[in-house]
Length: 249
Ligand SMILES: [Fe+2]
Image 1 (cartoon, rainbow, N blue to C red):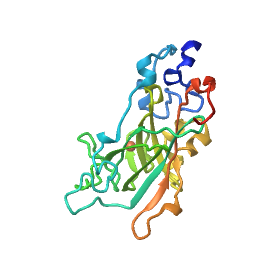
Image 2 (cartoon, rainbow, N blue to C red):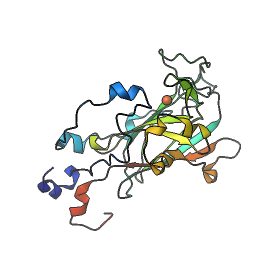
Image 3 (cartoon, helix red, strand yellow):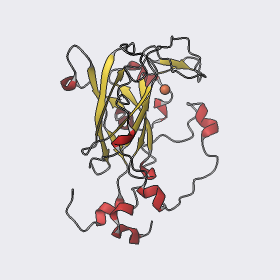
Image 4 (cartoon, rainbow, N blue to C red):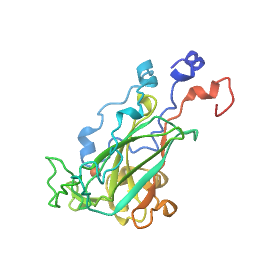
C-alpha cells in the first residue's frame, strides 16, 4: 500500500505477518507440508481494497445453537458424550485492541478422537449426538464463547506412531481478508502437545504456548462445565499509527 492510503483508516494496510513467529510452510517433520508448500520464492503484492475492507459479518447469520457443540447436532433432549467445557476469550489485534464482529468457526474430533467425516478411518466410535463444528461472532469488546466437549487425541499417518494432542481448530475472519487466521487450540497440561510433529513445526516455544489454553477456574460453572481461556491476536492496521485522533477512539 502507498502512504496515501493512511488518510483513510478503514482501508489502511495491515502489519506484515511475522514469518519467524509462524511455522515455515516447508516442515519435513510434518510430511504433508512437503508437497503442500510453495516450491518457489514468494512474491509480495500490495493489498487491494477487497482484501483490506472485507468481509463483514453480523450476528443475524448465526443460529441459536451455533456456539453450543454439545447440542447443535444432538437429538432433542440428548447431548454429546464427553467432558463438558466452555471455551472463551477475546480477539485482539497486535496493538492490543479488541476486534469486534469477527466470525470464528471451530471444528474438532469427538471425545474419542474421531471426526465425523467420510474419509475419517480412526476406529474410535462416532457419537451420533456430536457434529463437531460451530461458530460465533465476537462482541463489541472482542469477546467470544462456545460450549463443547473436550476432544480426544487421535493417531494419524505421519511417522511410525504419531498422535495429535487434544485440539480445537479455529478459523477466524477479522475485518479484512488480510486478518484471516487458521489456527489450533491446545489444552493446558496435555503431555501430548510436546510430542506432536505439527506443533513441532513452530519454531518459537513462546508461540506454541500462545496456542495452549489455560484452565480458567474462575469461569468454571459448578456441577456443569470447566472453562478454558483462549485469546487470539490478529494482524493490526498500520494506518492507526497515522490517524489524527486520540488512541482508542
Ligand atoms: Fe484435527
